[in-house]
Structures are given as structure tokens and as C-alpha cells.
Image (cartoon, rainbow, N blue to C red):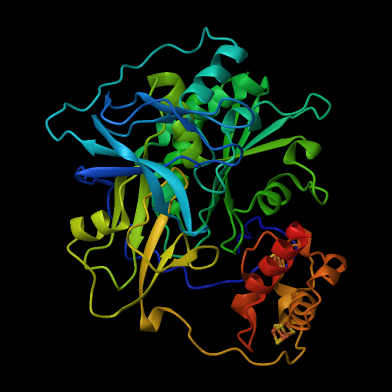
Length: 440
Ligand code: SF4
Ligand code: SF4
């Protein structure tokens, strides 16, 4: 029996539930009448608008910039007129500043021509990535040009592309790998050139054989003596796609607590971010639309949609024919790391990869009970933390004492909550402990 690569500690095996959308090709969603664009779409400083009310904007025009500090510009996802500024519903905060564009349905879509990027130097390539507003689209939205320029004291030798897509339900990266394998691999070559290195490993979970085949073919076609790109099939295990676990799986190197991947010579980018890098450099196209998986038994027509940033969840629901009577819960992101939302006014951002409309039988509403000290959460934690102690201390009103159980290394993967037979909300306990510590 072939044994596939994986990380050594913890992890869980939730049902992958990808069959609802895995075979559905990416579909262009119709243009909504309005786009509500949140000004803080990345880690760092929010954008300041560079447009005023009633200004006319073209598709791809800059509409916001970060004057000082970490960040990237924002672009108009479609042509139209700036309707105004206000506050938008937000999945994690209650609300966030935004600007609204009334779209022009008659404006032709902007066309982008392929350019030859091979002659460009590192600084020119980095500027293109920054100017196109690229952030990590599969996670927290860290500005990509910064990640592509790691500190010189830690020489990097390996680029890792994350094609694991280990969260249940989500198939956006999978479709991207099937439909754009050549562009993703060209994006990898751009990154290799920026980093000045030759080796790229692409990790894909073994439940995606067609993606492994197509990406392997594209990688073989693009590899030369100066650039080695290889696909590595991975064992199906959650959270295989998390940065530290993926690095350890593919290189055997363990990223120390609180250190960056570059501390062990690696840089990791998601495959969809790599496609966005290709778009920015090879086409000059900014990041203003996203492939989003819309799934669950609570939506009439599940789909993988290409959606403009700023489209509201209500626009998506309307486009897909509405919700079903079984709908019980809406989650932005996957079921393991996503956030339940109570409003369909929330707009899509650069980091939205899925919206799940879940029916009663797709969620677990069992009330939680006392810890029975079975230790399963400790075994399941990929970071080797002690979730049960974190939970008990938070319940006892002592969140400040959870640091010694590793709460600051918790990346909220949800393995502990998933495995707990007492259904204890261990991720929420960890989140609460970190929030309290931050306030103190
Ligand atoms: S959510 Fe945090 S504590 Fe729980 S398993 Fe993941 S890393 Fe460990
Ligand atoms: S899995 Fe749940 S019940 Fe078991 S030790 Fe952890 S918190 Fe307690």
C-alpha cells in the first residue's frame, strides 16, 4: 500500500463533503447592481479611499490606498459610480468601513493582454504584485509582496504551493487547479524568480487525483535545470493545508513557535494566491474577483462562482435561486475554521473562499457538557497544545493563565472541538483567552 505524506502530530478526519461542488466548473456570477467594498481587506492598515462620492470608476481602477504601513491598494471590481461611504456588515467584526459602487451593466468587461515578464527584475515584479492588491486569498489576507520578500537573515530554498484544500465542502482551489493549472505553475515560476530560488513543491491531498494529474503535467512542462517544480500527493488529513503542518510534511522541517516559515527556509503560498500573482504580473490584472464555493443543503443550487469583491451574500443567494426550507446556519469559510453569520448583507472580500448554507443534518447542535478528561483533544491538536486545560481555565474565569498551555500558538484549526465527545467549544475558549490577553 502506498503511504502518502502527512504531518506527524494530531489531526482529524472530518467527512470531506466536497461532492456537492467538486464537479461543477467555475461559473461567472452576474454583476450585482451594487458592490459594497470593505476598506480593510488585509492584515495591516485599512485603505483610505482615493475616490469621492459620484466619481465614475472603471473596472480595475484604484479606489483606495494605504498611505503608511503594511497594506495594498483596493481596486474597483466593476465600472460604475461611487454611491457613497458607510459601514458594512462584517463576518468577524460587527461592522467595517466600506464604499459602495453603483455598477454600470452596460460597461464592457476590461480586457487584459499577456505580457512577457521574464525580463523584469525582482523589484519590478514585487511592485506589480503590490500594485495589483494581492493578499493571501486562502487565509487571513497577509499582503503577498511582503511574504515574497522574506528577511535576508533567513535564506529561503523552497517554495511550497498549498493545494491541499483540506477544509470540508470547499472546492475553489480544486477547480482552480483543474481549470488553470498552467497559470498556477507560471505563477510559481514568477515567485521562484522573485525569491531567487529553484525549487517548488506543490502539496495536494490524495482525494484530488485529477488535480494531481493536471498539476503534475503542468509542472513537468515548466521545469528546467534552473527551476524544479514537483507535485507531492498528501494524505487526506485535516489540517494538512495549514502552513506549519504543510512545511513539516513536505520538508521535514519544524517551524519554531512564533517564527515565520522563512526561519526554516520555506515560503508558502496557496494555489489561488499563486494564480492571483500570475494575473497581476503576466496580465496586469488586479485582485478584485474571487472563486467562491457556495455549498450545503441549504442553498438551492450549489456552485463554484467567480464573484466580484463587494457582492453581498444576498446577491449570491438570489443568483443561485434562493435557499431551501432546510437552511439552518450560514457559515463564511469552511465548517472547521469559518464563522457563522446572521446577516446576508455581508459582502465578499478578497479572502472569502466559501459560503456554506447548512441544513440541520449538516451541523451539530448538541449542547456541550463537562470535560470528561478523555484527552482526545490533546491527541488531536496538531500544535501539541492542551485545549482541555485552556477551556477549563477560561470557564474558571482565569484566561490569563492559559499561556502556559500554549494558547498563543493556537491557530484555531478546530480539531479539538471537532473531536471532543462532550462537544465543548474549545476553539471559542481559546479565541476568548487570546482576546482577553490582547486587551490586557
Ligand atoms: S484549535 Fe487550537 S487548541 Fe484546538 S486543536 Fe487547533 S491549534 Fe490545537
Ligand atoms: S476532548 Fe473534550 S472531554 Fe475530552 S479531554 Fe478534551 S475537552 Fe475534555
